[in-house]
Structure formats: structure tokens, C-alpha cells
Amino acid sequence: MKYTDSSITRKLKFHQLMVFEQVVLSGSMLRASQMLNLTQPAVSKVIHDLEVYFDSPLLVRGNRGVVPTELGELVLKRAKLLMAELRSLTDEVNAFQEGTSGHVVVGTLISASVSLLPKAIRLLKQRAPSVMVSLRVGQMDQLFPAVEVGDVDLVVGRVPDDWRWRDEANSLTVDTLYSEELCIVAGAKHPLHESQSLTLEKLHPFPWVLPTRESLLRRTADKLFAEEGLTVPSNVVESLSILTNLTLMQDQETVALMPYEAASPFAEAGLLKVFKLGKSLAFGDIGCFSASGRELGPAAKLFRECLKEA
Image (cartoon, rainbow, N blue to C red; front, side):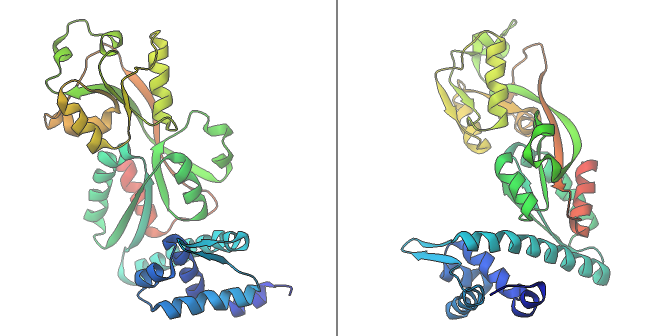
């Protein structure tokens, strides 16, 4: 069977694609039916009708749930783009009919979620209380593909040093928000906070919390030690969980490398203290990424403006 634009638009419905996307995301017909407030037989029928139309399985069923076939992956990729456009259409219609409203999905690094995003969300809620914001925390290598396919509207995080040469450069647009600095911190009563001539070498023997190895921040940390002629500390916990790291540092021994914006609220609360090394530690620019080939809906546009103001 040869498919045409006309035959697909007559046979396929947005509802079917929405159900299919939720089934894949949930990994289960039952969980998808619960998320969509449908019966499981209704969800199964939608998937059956799609597979009959495409004359091929879209899902592989197993004891641990369902996963998409190769054709299912293809359909899912395009379904996500269509759902993103539908979300934008919904936002625009609601904004026109009722004033600014809608839903914006933001992907972010943990560091950006501590200070910048709460400020931007407060600004957004002051101007448009009915806009719902959903946050998804992850690494940039996970978030860039998500914004490309429409899973998220905006991504807030560090602009990679090799940005111009990355595969995503042609499909994403970035607005630089500010330059981020790093700091080395520990519990407020760490014995070296009062040291008059503190160096990285003196901190080296203590237990450290460092970012996970695949993160951009870890590359910066490794470079920091190398520039001082030091190896990476041997007593290390790898973690990007700010709450876990904060708890570890309450032993007044453990030391961590953190973005300054992420550490500031905890330093102001007296839970952490920044070591005075006598020099600034540059991390890079923090930016707001969006898909260059897809226009943002009103809610996402407004949130981007709040990010810039924050």
C-alpha cells in the first residue's frame, strides 16, 4: 500500500497519535490508560487500529511492558513533533480567547533549577497565573534531542564550548542569559575556611563530591585540577543531586565544586560556605535553547522573556 498525504490525513487522528505516544512513554497499556483516563480496552483498540492501518506492528509486547518497533520509532518521532505543534496551537487559541494561558515544558540542568528558574517562574506567575510550567531535569545530551523533537519547548543550561561544531547547532537557537562562575564549597564549619593562604592543593586530600563523568561540569573540574598540576582526588563521590551533596558536606570535611548560582542560596542560609581561593573560576555561558525550525507558543515566548529578565 502506498501512503499519501491525503490518505494519512483521512485515516489518522491526533487522538490516536497522542495515545500511541503515551503508551510508549508509559511502557504499558495499563499505565497509559490511567494517564489518559481511558479504559485499557480503548487504548488497546487505538493501537490495534494504528497497526492495521500501517499493516505492521508498532509495538513489541513483553513481560516488562511494550517498546516501539523500528516503524514505531519512526511514527513516534513524527507524532512528538505533531503533538508539540498541537500544544502550541492550544496555547495560541487559549491566549487569544482568554488572555495569556497555556503550558510550557522546560528542560534544565539541576544547577539552573536552583536559582534562575524559580526567579523566572515567579515573574511568569505574576504576569500569567494560569500558565502551567513543567520542568524536566537532565543532562544537555538528553535535553537537546528532546527540544528538537518537541518533547520540551525550552532548555536552560550551559552553552557547550564546542557549540558551533555540534550536530544540534543547525536545528537549535540559543539566547545567552549570563556567564556562570564556579566555586568550591564545604559545610560552614570546615576547618580550612579560616585558612589565610588557601590553595586547591590544601583541599585536595579531603573527600570530594564531583559531577558525574559525562557532564560538562566534570570536564571543567578535571581541567581545574590539571592546571594546578594535581590529579583528580581519589576520595570522590560522583553526584549531580544538590540535596545529596548538601547533606554530604554537613560532615564539615567533604568539599564540592558547584556553580556559584547553585551554591548561593545555601550559603546565604548558612549551610555552606565558599572557599576564598583568590581567583574566579569560570564555567561558561548559561543560555536558553529552542528549536530553530518551530515557532514557540505564547506561553513559551513569555517564559523566555521572564528568563531574560531574571
